[in-house]
Length: 396
Image (cartoon, rainbow, N blue to C red; front, side, top):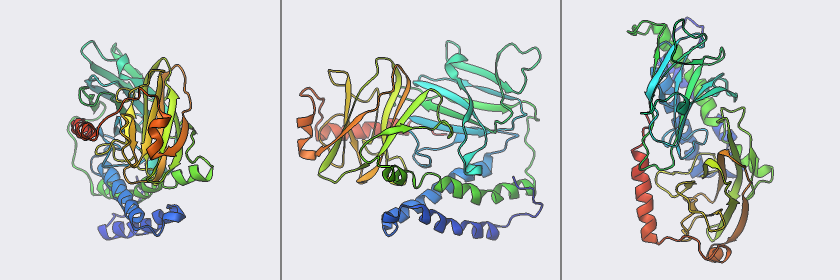
C-alpha cells in the first residue's frame, strides 16, 4: 500500500489508467497490431485485470482475509488451467490464521503460501510451500488447520508454519470428472484480530484505489508476448519444457508447451505414451495473447478422465479448426495460432509428446484403426454437458 497521506481521487485514478492502452498494445506481437479482433482482445485483458484487481481493492483486507477468485473463465489471465479452480486470500506474514472447510471429492486440492505478488511487483516468484489437503482432512473430508509463524502453545491440532515472506494463500482445486466431483469448500479466519471488522478509514480506501493502476498494468501485460517468444525460439508445432518454478507453479507438476500454427484445412496430431503411474495429466490450448481458449463453450481441453487412450497406451489428440470426428479433439475455436500446453503431476515419467502436421482430410490415415470416434450429434451433447458441468463448479 502507498505511504502517501494524500487521498486518491477518482479523476486521478482514471488518468493513471489511460497509459495502459498504449502499454498493452506495444506488447502485442507486431503482426497483430492492425488486427481489430486482437486489439479488442487486448482491451478485454485490461478489463479482466481490472476485474481481478478490483476484487482485492474491495475485499482484500489482510486483517480480515477471505478467499476470492484468482483466475478463471472471466478472469482469463496467466493462462488458467481448464480443470483448476483458483482462489486466493491476502494475508500478513505475522498473522495467525485458521483454515477450515471440506476437501470435497475432486482429484486434489492444494493450498500454497506465496511470496511477492506478481500483481504488485510485475515479477514472478517461487511458491514458498504447499499443503495437500489430503494430509489434514478427516475421513469425512473436513479439515481445520492453524497457520502461524509459531505453533500456538497447547495446540495439538494440524499446524502449518507461516513463512515470513508469505503475503498470499493460493488454493488450487483440480477436477477430473467435472460433472460428478464435489469441489472444496474453504474459509480463512484471522485469529489475532478482533472478530468484528471496523469501518475502513479514508486512507485505507484511498490506498486500495491508488495501487490498482499498477496491478492492472502488470496483470494484463505479463504474458501478452509469451506465445510470440515461443515462436521466435522456433517452437512452432513442437514442444519444450516450460519452467514455472519461479512463477508460483504447482510443486511436483511438470509443464510443457509450444506454439501452434495451422490453417483451416490442416490438423496437428499430438501423441504421447501416458506414464504407467500418473495422478493428473491434461492438455489445453491458448490464443496468441496467452488466454486459455474458452473451455466452457468449446471442446478445447482434455484431461486424463475425459480423454480416451488407444490400445497401445498412447494418448493421441487432434488439434484443428474443423471437427475431425475423433473423440480426442482439441478445438482451436477460431484461433489458427496460439499455444499448446500440457501438465504431468505425480507421474512415473514426464514424456514430451510428438507433433505431426497433416491435412485435415487425412487425419484418420495417421491414427490407429481403433481410435475412438464421435458423431457431430454426439459432439454437441458432449459440449453441452461440459458447459453445464463446469458452470456448477464453485468459482467463488
